[in-house]
Amino acid sequence: MKRNINLLIATVLLGILVIIACNKKLDLTNQNYPTTESYFKTAAELQAGVNAVYSSMRAGNLVGREWFFTHDMRGAETNAGGAQLEAPRAELMKQPSPSPTNAVMTSVWNGAYQMINRANLVISKAPGVTDNTALRDVTVGEAKFLRAWAYFELASMWGDVPLYTEPVNSPTGYKAKSPVADIYTQIVKDLTDAAGILPATASANGRATKGAANALLGRVLMQKGDYTGAKAALLQVYGKYSLTPNFSDNFDGDVKVAASQLTVGHEFNAESIFEVTFVDKGDDNFNWGYVGEGPTADASIMRSQEYGIVWGNVVPSDQVLAEFEPGDPRFKMTFYESGDKILTMGGSAAGVALTDADMNVATSSNNGVVKKRVYRKYSVLDWTNDGFHPDGINQRLIRYADVLLMLAECEAEIGTPAQAASYINEVRARPSVNMPPVVLASKNAALAAVMHERTVELAGEELSNIDILRWRNKGYYPSIHADPKPGQTNLFPIPNSETSANPLIK
Image 1 (cartoon, rainbow, N blue to C red):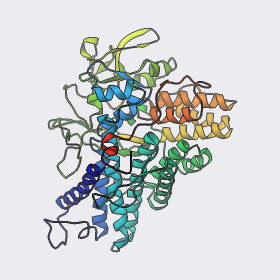
Image 2 (image 1 turned 135 degrees about the vertical axis):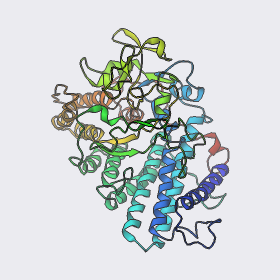
Image 3 (image 1 turned 30 degrees about the vertical axis):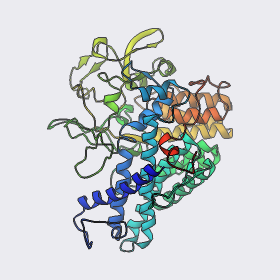
Image 4 (image 1 turned 135 degrees about the horizontal axis):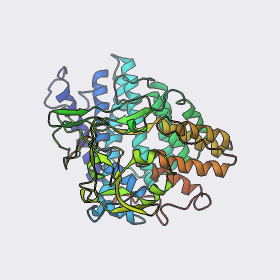
């Protein structure tokens, strides 16, 4: 772990340098040599510190690229687009357990601990900040929310991991693994604290709120098996948001080609509870250094490119295609298939029909129909098909439909299937969906309905992997549903880069 600890220390210093580059009103003895002791004296500086945590979250190690691969390759909603799918990603998808040297898995591990270390620094410095206690406290709430998110990624996919609650300031500051129960205890504490501090409405788009903290707390408690606690947390969110009439408004965003702003999409809408902000500068650049910070750094995401028709690394699985009921309009709003039109410019142009020849992907089969298909969610193809286009579509990590379906699962688990049906039917009654209501009379029927509805509503949103782990641990495969990833090992191995350097983890 020595290499990783040195990296963590370096990223703290780098974060401070980035903060200084963005803030010219600092009163330091020597601005060229900032230290953690000479900075973080004001609430504004503390807020700049939490901005560096958000930067880590959207960088290539995490949501900007490797995070969505980690979840989707392990979930049930994707297949390889062809031989072009790179080996580390294919290994996650096809092998029961990846090698400890898997680069994608290691990137997510490193990114999560970078977030944690930066959040720890902000939290540790907060008691000394007194100029604006209201801003200070909200900033601490954001840091705790972000730390909890990073730890949930680690706990849910790795289990026992090192628990750091103070910034690493020594190359020998190793930690042994803590039991996963202790990690969850810290996550729950952080989110409970955050929910008590954060505002209902963010001061700026992209910042964590009370609703985000309670929604994530509900997700975490469900994963722990505490459905009563999860329901209580989720009810704090219920009714505070609403479903957008148009399902597709949850997956678009700003698309820019050179100087032409083609669309700004529907980001931060009434359904959005927490989303990671990305920006399309129109220059087709991506931060391949995976740092993701600084006032001029590229802040795009690779999702549309990776899952599109040119690179074609990932296609929808036959399994997810088969889950949709006949006539469910979400099918066409979730996938493109050959024959569908792209470049309609939001419906204002005639568009161009896709052909198999246009799509550099493997085929998929749905009800015996073999075609080429790709994900439409988070795609820029309705606006541009310029071959290589890292995009600016925000990643919606938590949206209200997910909260409703989590509440439905809680009701199923505690034995109130009729209430579970009520929440499911709210999702199915969205004007652009308008699917017939379900009637549920038993726990198993309610759980089966939840599994179905989460698949068709949330397909391709990086939730399948976590759902599978939760339901497998509950023993619902194959009693309620066939295991979608039979033979898969639940937890990742600790990355080799960690075990080879940290004497406390072997």
